[in-house]
Length: 455
Image 1: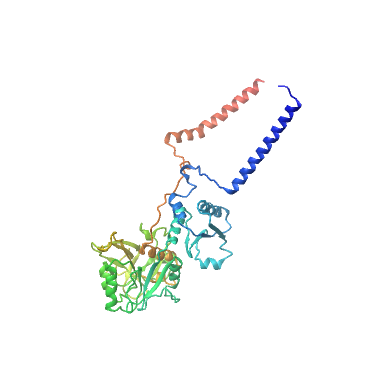
Image 2: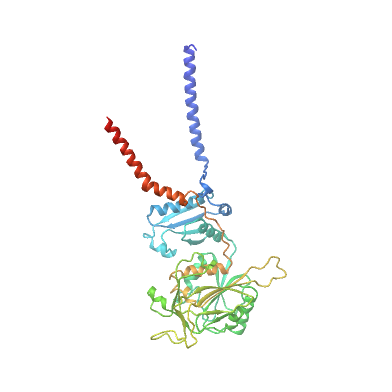
């Protein structure tokens, strides 16, 4: 091809046109990157992406979500929290994350009941809940509970010296009542001498009555349970308050005396009336309950439910415990010749049953749920902060009010994070490291030495 002035001009024009187009394309791609975001998870099993159940839940949450992480200046911990939240922000951008150093904000730590470094407060629609375990299942199930629009009414029996859910005395349940309201539950008090149990009651709580109930009030409680109502009974030793008929109805007997636990001395507790529970059964109430719970002056329970109820022991004392009938003074020991019972003893049980179906109700009735604890002081203002008492109380209320519809999210694992070797492979690697590799090094050195010697 003959190069002329005209051909040189065309080549220059082509070069400039290519440069202008190339720069234009790069600029357009840069602009498009600011307008649209595309992310892809190429890991095995898409383990860096939330599950379909979580995506569906996020799509049904129209309002913004606020996450407050109480984490110290630990770069690794904060990156783990950011990585988890980023998976949710991909599908719901209006999720905000705020970090607070608990050492510099002690008042907020006390107000939010923070007990673990890295604990996250999840807030949605004016409701909030704390999570301590950093995983998708915990966060998604928390959002599910907070998103429920239906009001759940928790009714406390009053008028007989019961512990007050709004009271500030040490024996009252004011702090626990505030925690229930912070979880979005509606707390109400009712006197059966003046009113009947509301029909929209999700859970009725009897918290240690000190005065005997009237026969008409006991009849209301009997009918409430017979009609499938959910009940949390926080009893006290030696104070049946006329509720023997209710205990007989659900097949529970309160053993005489106060439970004494010798193992409490290992925890530095000198009071013999305190009971410590360290192990729990595989039950929804005890889910993720990894801390000890403390019960002052507990009563032991004996169950004979019959065919109508299914009873599961929830709180069981250590073998070195017994029911002390005599006064807790001086030297205390188990008397085998008396009516005292040796441990382990049940001080808390959960009961389920199926109420009779209503002819007007098309769907099958839900399982009736009842929990009876032989001590109510463990949720009082004085002892609520001990161990896992608060978590146990909240789990009981959530379960009893049928607020346990957790999403069963399978943990995504990477198949390439573990290496499984058979005996043959292990033998080859072991012999190769101990014998083969040293011989190879010796042989290499010998070859180099012989080559240098021939020179």
